[in-house]
Length: 346
Image 1 (cartoon, rainbow, N blue to C red):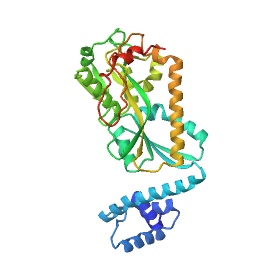
Image 2: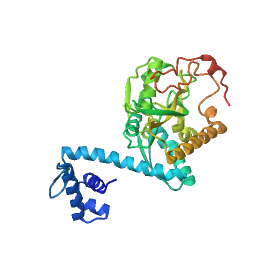
Image 3: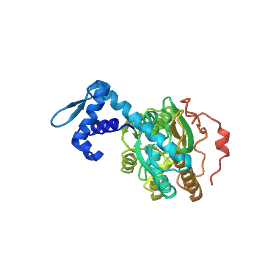
Image 4: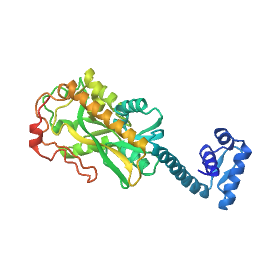
């Protein structure tokens, strides 16, 4: 990217000429000269200078927005040219929703570093809506989400199926009931994520499918905080089995046996529609799929799905997979009884 634009972006982001000069390994007069040259070429003032800081003018905001896009395109151009010789390396910006980002992605990153040490990943954890928007605007190279609210302009590739269970503290009155009726669930305090989260969307879909309106919802900002609050006995929550692996093993949380469980959803890999995939992104996705498959196999071999989450009774006669990300429908409680009746515990 042209150096004047690079200098301008640094000044605009740091709001300080001296700090920008340090980061660019330039003198402050040289930084000032690049800004003057860019302003003269565009015939517009881009920055308002004061003794303590720098502010952007309206023209400066426009230039900063497009300069960032140009910088990202320039980076991708260099990556793709480099990958013509089969090299996977360089920066890779990854976004993941909380469930996947906190419980599956760490192992993926370790494997990626082992296989492709030249790839330098950076990770953002957020809710599904936030991750989708940042992939759309090229702030992220790739995203992994479990929600359906992805909007337009993105491609979604199915990665894995997730099973979700209602978790309660081991000492909770409902924890040892052979079956919990919807009316009892409705009276409980539910710990939920914020709107825009895939986990929140799953909870809302379950409420609708069961025909309940819980008397109290408490929003918390992360899956970990929800688990700890449930462990403390404040309420119950619908959570992914990926997130519950440790607590179920320790016995600090128990899954409730109720209609419509396990609730099923899918994780998806998001990319910007029409973009060419780089070798670096391909390497990440190959590693991601391999690690996800390994973890699913480990769950099956350990018997955790049956020992911790199922007592052999068919508590979910109406649930089937929902593989359609785009049509917004939830078929978890409305599909064939036969397929679930045929599923036997391992």
